[in-house]
Image (cartoon, rainbow, N blue to C red; front, top):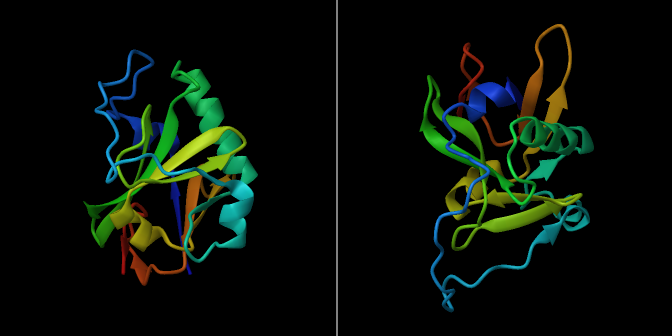
Length: 157
């Protein structure tokens, strides 16, 4: 199991999340119809197929959202993108609306969006918030990661 710790403020720089009006959204079709959110208890019971946020992580996401002046209706997007020294890196961003085919998980009123491609890389991952001498930030415990880079911001599969 590989653990990664990230600072939310650093990850959110340049995120473009604002408390203003959301971008226009097209009408839902059969292919893009909103999926019902998975509750935290559902996610915990099926953690092999879902991303899990600990209560501390949820609290810190909400606190950061409030401190940044972002409207509480915005949810957290958790994604994996190509990059970093090891090939992949985690991305956190605030978004107002879900995208077509997103998995939506709700934790104490916080909506978490995960796209289908990222979901494959994040299956079984737990996100916690760590406070300590070694650093403060979000810790990704991803059982699928085969290695991490010395910089601590990327992982390999």
